[in-house]
Amino acid sequence: MSTLHLLTEIRAQLHRLANPATASTLQGFFKTGPGQYGEGDVFLGIKVPATRALAKTFPDVGLDLATELLHSHFHEERLLALIFMMRLFATGDIHTRQRTYEAYLSNTAWINNWDLVDISAPHIVGVYLADQKRTPLYQLARSPSLWERRIAMVATLNFIRAGDFIDTLQLAEHLLIDREDLMHKACGWMLREVGKRDQEQLLNFLDRHAPAMPRTMLRYAIERFPETLRQTYLRR
Image (tube, rainbow, N blue to C red):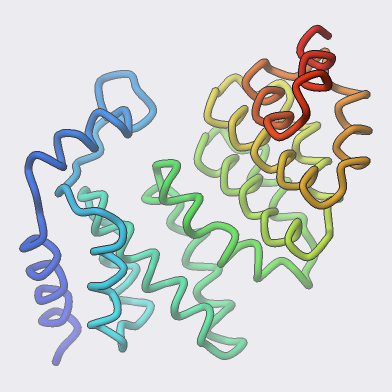
């Protein structure tokens, strides 16, 4: 089957799963109204497990097709494209992994909602940079794009899982002045993940920065603390 025919078939099968009622709910949940972070995003109304199941029925999707699918105004098509890219990265050789990583970062304009970032950044950017210089993360963290900054922070989840907290803590410090609530949530989430594995590291960070942390970031970071300790930091 040609690439064009395969792409047409993938889209046709995905659109058969569309549910207008679910789409309406998702449009609100992902803040797609004027001036909101997801402004203009269009949903078909397909839940993630169904999208993942569909991806399994197309085991041979290449990077070019996945990238083409990523350039869609339908949210679920972009999600499916990222699932294909993650699979390519996970199963590919060194060359394929590099090409997929580069394609991912070249197409961040279409990785433009928090779920798309969160599902993919640790598994592509985080894994690729695990044994590389982490400079790209700091470049992303300085981007005017909310989504590129979120990619930088959430990608470090892969490092955290390996017991490496340095970049998470440095990026969180850099992003203390970020204006976006979605970044406050991402930073707080990653700090909480650090704390699950090494509470002393998190406490040291909080002792230095809690008074300057956006309230949402702080609340996310200390979510698992005993109530007395939570209140101690909240009062700061």
